[in-house]
Length: 353
Image (tube, rainbow, N blue to C red; front, side):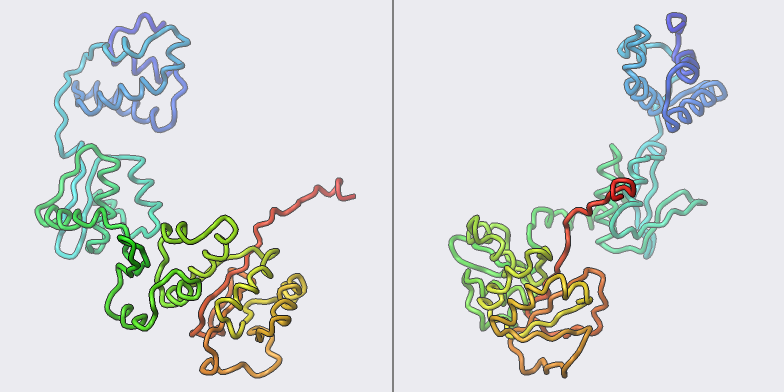
């Protein structure tokens, strides 16, 4: 039957009735068949998409002893005309305080813009365009997504100028205050004057107490520096010291107690410590007691909460990730998150019996 196919229009009909197509591909071929018969023309863009669909089903054609290289050469009865850029290219423009995107249907682009972590773009059904409040941040997101999913992206004069200005920052690695080593010396880069004023009394070195103090002020310790400092045996301790919000497993939480002492912790606040958590991690509480680090339970107060003004280096230890932070003190050196990543052992009812 396939041997009787002599034109692209006949191949479209054959594929619709004899090839297992995806819903999207089937819809495209339906529309292409109607377009070719009613308009008696097809665009170069439509032809290109059609050829990509043929190649997509190469295995099914091979079973029918047909070759993609031959099928894409079949002539068209309809006249093939050049595609108009308005229907093939993406367009970005700025209209007063609105950022506007127009482009032909692209399933991957739609999925990407919808699933973006901070989706600020809305679909205007009547105008068939995406819009958002203008900002250079939104422009950068939109431009990157458009370039990834469209072959040609056109931008208005203002957008082009702004994109060119942003391009000089593409290779900047650090966008937040970060401790790095450059030419053998330690520097805090990516910081503003307020941060530098806050840490001006801290001598920059790679001692764990220093890294911990810098992390308290929101300064990141670069990965390269951590690799330089840590050994296989100390990497967990170094990462703990270098983070303001370190994460530890519940079943190994007591191993941090010596680290707390080394970093100068003088008080521990327990947060979201349910009765089950306190019972399960009695080892941690005993270890803290043994080294004489005072503990205060924020959820089960027995005595008066200590004044934060009298503490130099207090830590918060959270037993749950979902917790209201309203009762936690603000001025702390670290917030340690305990998690349970152990797999849950589920047994079927019959097995349990």
